Length: 573
Image 1 (tube, one colour):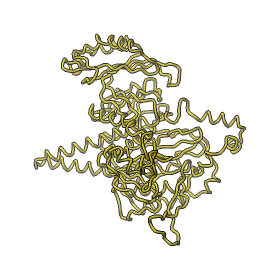
Image 2: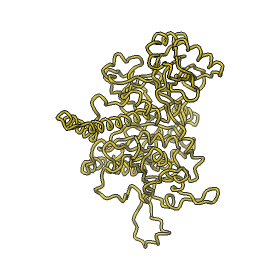
Image 3: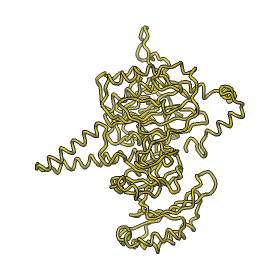
Image 4: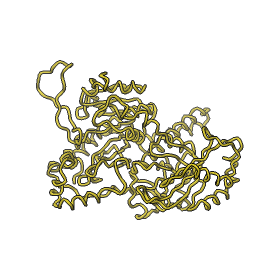
């Protein structure tokens, strides 16, 4: 196994690395021992994770944070916490910017005002250099689920900013169904009602007034309740809460969730029977997934990105209103559509001018292309589409810090191989019919150019989100591409088949681009080479060929393949 940039033999002769487990993130919380950090498939680098029920022991770490219960969908398990943490970081940035603006507006010219302004400017300068404000090094401190079951949909999140921040995070999330202010949890309904009754008067003064309409929501996990049983369950909580407001099932001011977690012995994680009650602070909104469903889109290609994954990429890249976002492998524009929905200004580039300019015809015989996709949705079209590739990017050498995010799905040779532009001494045909010459573009070369372009063009604090192909015999944490100006933030795996997967890599620019430093960094590592460059032949080999390559019988090979696939995991899990 070789690190990108290291001199090595061609990928086809590289000896496959042994099967490696997913990278084990190192918790930043002081005092956590190794068993508490082991086997956390969170997708986050350096997560802050504390054991269940240990809030009192970590009071200093949790100072100024509110504790919430995040109820996740049972989808894309490695993406769930990473998405929420990235969104929480974005919300905190927006809150700090708003606070600085308010301080500036309130400044009255007095000495104290000038000192406060100078302090705010110094803090802003630190953030632009990639530093985090003191006491806010982590957007979220995670508390493990009950009994530390990591696949559980119920995680505890300690966040800054109170209910408004938590609600903003939930509203953008694709994988968090609801964020609750947890009022109680227990192993039985009787115990839960007793816990709620003990603090009835205290909470009713805030959330049970006569002028506040409310509604109960019953949510079951691992079981199913009939409507009659749900009504009986709701009625059993009336006495322990004592809400005085009217019930409003259509548009209540308050929603209270009763979460029933019961194992059914099939499919889902076999969690212990547990009951939760909490006030809804914010809820996720997945309606954009139906709005931009690929099945309703007229212009598609064989590698158009799934809508849900496109939104996850934009959320983890912290795309927001007025962000300037580039997709250098734009294709049919499937990644730019969610970015535009979120209010970003977008740019696209692709090496194939036929894809971005000519397009094709739909089922009705009408010409369609990227522009018609945006017009069909009523979205602002991209600011521009360029025919270019990163290997010979047309940007001027001194261009720096102009993009807020780069979000893309580079070609990695399974369904569509990478191509780069090459110059040839030949007569140029008329531009109307001329298609520039191209040559094969290895994954290693592509990643090298992508990271260097991101380091140049992103603002400090801007993010790069891209997919890296992976396979059990060809992936190791050491091969994830690096750059001296970029810091790895998240690494989330999506299983595509038993033979290969892909990993969403999120990187953040933490310092200004230094051309000499970057040149020395890559020169020390030699030509870019990755063992994953031969993924195409690996994916399309027969089981018998793979077994022979590994020196195993066909039955032994199939047993190894089955053992590699995590239990109850698939493309969307």
